[in-house]
Image (tube, rainbow, N blue to C red; front, side):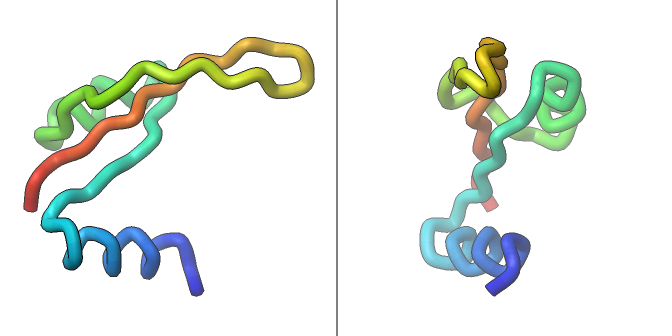
Length: 58
């Protein structure tokens, strides 16, 4: 099952769409009406990366 299909299926059930946006993508999603749900920090190959869980209602 593709990622897009999983997102669409979840959106229909929950009536929301969620994304995990990078620091640079965050303003783009905000312009589309997404709101910040949670700031996240993950470690990849010893580097600390920040991303943002965002969502919007359908």
